[in-house]
Amino acid sequence: MPKILIVEGNTAEGRRRAVAARGREANLLYAESLRRIRGDLTLGVAFPADPDTALPDLAALKAYDGIAWTGSSLNVYNGGPEVERQLEFCRTCFASGVPQFGSCWGLQVGVVAAGGTVLKNPLGREIGLARKILLTESGRAHPLYEGRPSVFDAIAVHRDIVTALPENARILAYNSMTRVQAAAFQVGAGAFWGVQYHPEYTFGEIAASMRRYTAGLVEEGFFQTEAAAALAADTFASFDRGGTAGDRWVFGVDADVLDPAERLRDLANWMRFISEE
Image 1: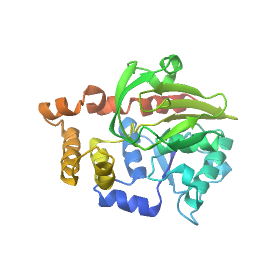
Image 2 (image 1 turned 135 degrees about the vertical axis):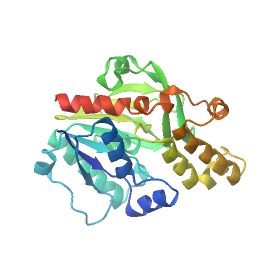
Image 3 (image 1 turned 90 degrees about the horizontal axis):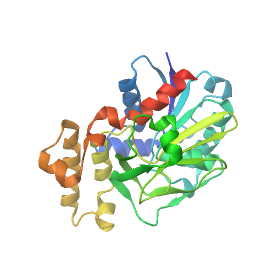
Image 4 (image 1 turned 120 degrees about the vertical axis):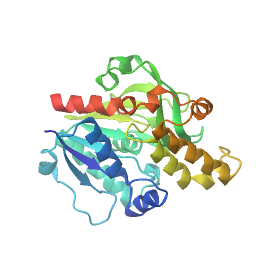
C-alpha cells in the first residue's frame, strides 16, 4: 500500500481564493486524482507555505514512498517566507531520497531548490490547454511517458517557466511556449520528475483558474470582455461532462485531454515507478 505525501503549494489565502472561484484546494484535488489511479493509498499532506506549520522531518519523510508537489499561485522569483519555506522543505525531501513529482509550481520549486532558475515567460501566459507538447528523445525513452504519443495536449495554467535546469537534468518535453514542459533530474539519491502542465486537473479546475484570473486575461488580450472570459470558463467546465461537439471543435479539445485516464497517465506512470522502487 503506497504512502504518498502531498505538498500543498498555496498559502491559506491562495487556497481560499481557489475555493471562492468554485475550485478545489490543490491538495484535495491531488488526493482525488491519486486515488482515482489507485485506491489503496495512504496520503499525508504538508503545508510549507503556511507560517508555523509542522512539517515532516527527514526521518518522517523516509516513511513515504513518494512526494507529490501541487501547483500554486505563487511566483518563486518573488521570494518571501512562503516561498523560502517550500524551497528549504524541498531540499529536505531531496535529502530523504524519496522520489518526487511536481506539477507546474511543483516543477519550478524542485528546479530552483536543485540550483536552476525560473522566470516570468516573455511569451505570456499559457492557460486552458498546453498545445502540441512534444517529447524529446529522452522523453520518449523515459518511464514518465510510457504509453504517451510523441505529441499531445494537456491542461495547463502558468505564467512562469523554467529558464535554467539543474546540473544533469534531462528535458523530457517542450512546446512553442517553453523549452521545458517536463524534466527529470536527481539530487543525491532523490529523483524528481516534473511537468509544467497539470495532469491532476479537471476542466472544472481550469475553469476556476480562468475565473480567478479574469481581469488579467482580458488585460492580456485573451478575451475582449470579462463576460467572454466567464463564458469560456463555463464552456471549459462543461468538458468534464463531454461538452458539445461544436465546443470541442472550437476549443480544440481532443481525446488526450477529454479522457481522464489519458490526462492522468503521467501521474499513473510515476505511481507505478514508486511502487516498483
